[in-house]
Amino acid sequence: MEKNGAKTLKRKLPLIIAGVLVLALLGFAVTYVITSKNKTPEIAKDGVVTVDQGDIVSTFSSSATVQSGRQGVFEILDGTKVKAVNFRVGDIVSEGDVIATFDTASLDEMLRLKKQDYDNANKTYKDYLKSMSDAPKQRTALQEQIKALEKTIATLQAEQTATTTAANTAASAATATENKQLSDLKAALTNLLGNTRLAESLVNAVLAENGSVGQTITAFQNLLGGSFMMDPSALTSMMGSMGAMGNTELISASLQLVQFKVQEAMLGVQTGTSLESVYKTVAESAENAYRAAEQTVTQLKAGWVAAADGVIREINIVAGEPYQSQQSSSGISTSAVTSALASLAAGNMDITPLLAGMFTNTVKGLVVEYHPFAASFLLAQNNKDKISLDQPVQVISVSGKVFEGTVSFISPVATESSDLVSSLIGGGGSTKGVEARVIIPDPDTSITIGLDVKISIDLETKTNAVRVPMESVQYDETGKSYVVFLYDAEGKKVVKQPVKMGIYDDVYYEITEGLAPGAQIIRVPQRGLKDGDKVKVLE
Image (cartoon, rainbow, N blue to C red; front, top):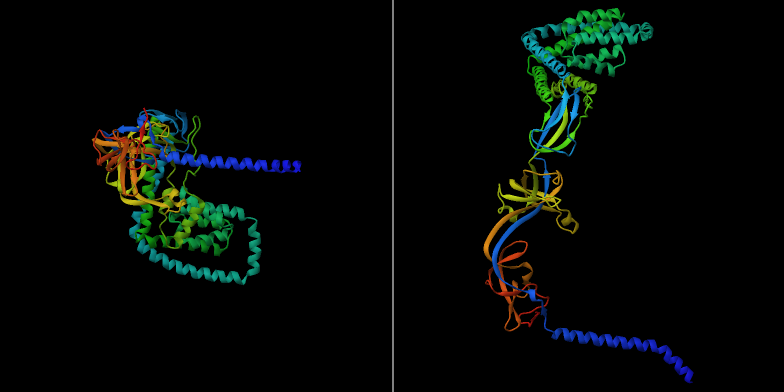
């Protein structure tokens, strides 16, 4: 019996101990709560501060994205040999620094070719103007010739259809000499259109699309006015070449019809301004290219010199190597030529961009981002009227370095920017404001275009303002007002004091009503502190 009782007690002992511990903890907690409620709040010696007077500067702070202020673009001509490159991408340059030098031996020849292009285009334009007055009379005569020739061709085609077997036999025999015929045709067409770079591009484009003499003839018939640089005096030479090829009378008549229709189409537009505009644009483009090349050559001969302080953004040249751009030096492609010819055949004469492109082959060799830089930011409505042009700005780089800047632009129109944080928490996802920019006159490598900097703008300054630490002010939900807790040293208690605030900075609030200099307040009021509570200030 005793043994069983001992065993039962042994099993119950852990439960008894646990119960005792719980009761002890409950007793401690009740005692702690009662003691805490009755305990006087203790405040450190420096927890009581005296209200003083001093300066408060209200500031606007924001992040701003750095932008390019002004670029220096140095152009180069294909084939220019680079002697030396004295800087690398990302290097800072000063005004007057020689960035790169060049071997100028080939530059004069490049410029001569540009001048030749301009002279040729200008002469063609002037010749066209001289021939314009005779265009209506010549066109009438050509229209009559075209009608007669079309009747002749129709008769010849009917005869050819009647002799299909003979024609097939002749076609088989012609296959063996097709390559030579195409070669002769190319020479004849080049002679017809004029031996120019544009004529060569036109002929190559058409021949690339058509694999036989007959198809090529048909293509030129369909394109009609495409060959506007044709020399009518070349007809006799061309007919001689075609005769030597041993083709039928039908082919000769077809080629003659092409020539007449080309002339007729040309004369049809000569009475208006469309074709004149094309000739004029080509001449002007050639002149612009020549003048630009003159400036480029002058700059290359002198070497590339920094016009202001800045940073190297882009370098596309290599010391010791001739420069060669990735684009075609002629600036024109066969596909573009074919499209232009088709456009001409449809009556659309606006091929100015294509023609102007022939004379463009200067490209960027190097780019410098000159100082000053700019930084853009969004200005909310409540701050818009507080910031003005030319206002001083502090710009803080990612490394913490401070630069002086000024407000250079405030947009008169509000914009809307995406707000990632707002959208993630269920807000509208955008912020409205006015775009503003700050000029940074003397940035260094710690300020990078495309990245953000911090900006700070002084909005308002109060001197001898009554001020309190920001952490001393609380919002009283009951009284719907801001309050501080005055310290009554004699009564060892606190008094809740409503206050009105003015401007603020990173440390202080300005107090416009409710406090006078010299009053003592609790620096950081404890949570739950009430009006009239006793407090103990530690020594």
